[in-house]
Image (cartoon, rainbow, N blue to C red; front, side, top):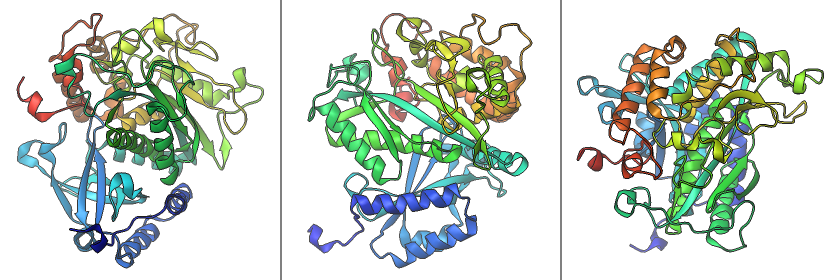
Length: 476
């Protein structure tokens, strides 16, 4: 069929940016959900160029799932969208498989047609259980509920910005073919801040930045990272649920752009031994009435008492929550002190080997940076664990807590033992979800060599939750 016969929505990038920024501002200003719902439904009804709505949700491990609903069907049935939860790893058992998707109309995105297809818009969904309550395994809903509770009870707005590193490798589906090839091939060997205009890595970074800008990310800076073929594309702060949504979109955009170039974007924490791994440095702050509560010009490192208490709670529970921040076998290769690895459970303004860093800041930018997070972790679980621990966790009475030489685990089995033994993780996730998450991590770990060794093993890539392939999994 000739494309000339089709007439689906395909907006210029500046117009996309304008629409997405307007939606982002509504979300930031907490416009009433019913007002946004009415506006979105009217838009979908009136805009004849839209053919489908892509509804997105994440499973317990953080994989992003997408369902396309025909627009006309969705307009009639948006409040009763069912799906088979038993097909999603970590969700319901087969005997209780029916789940629903609710629309979070505030999390609505217009995406560039050249990478997402014409005539489509995106919206994040909320997983609803049979009884109409929020599904316990949907960590996005848990994070959203927690953020709303903090705002309602204390007037706190939880803010986050994540610096997400990744690698660009030759070939499409490079991770899925790793068990056949045993290696990843760089597209660039220039290193930190260095790539020539027009080379594959620079072209990739530029293109991703353009798509992000169009989707309202409000970019800050982008550059090649320390390792060969490694990248980082930074964007501005957002309220915590919006920030986690942007992590999911960031990785989706990177993979879409890479695939269009015949390449692969990888967010394995340590895909290549001998060079720096990839992290997801998680910068957080808390504001109230527009004031940054972590800022105190007279405080130590200009961080407030609330900020230091937040840090002390993170350090106290560092080993308890490590599995939620480093959720794969491969993640423990990154926690290697030879490559600026944040494996020490300390806080420091300068030591990049510390789990928590206190960056130089001012009244607007004062923040706490949790450096030990892997880019493959469930972003909703990361932000829930960081904020809830920082605000509600206990504080150890140990002397010199911020400088005592304690270390994060160097393997996933120790991390699982710490996670399972901790009362705090049961409080964080609930016993049922905690048990399911632990089971998923053990199932993956048991398919991999118990000792990491000096080379990346095929199994730690093949059974990685982001690379997950049902066909390969069922051959084990």
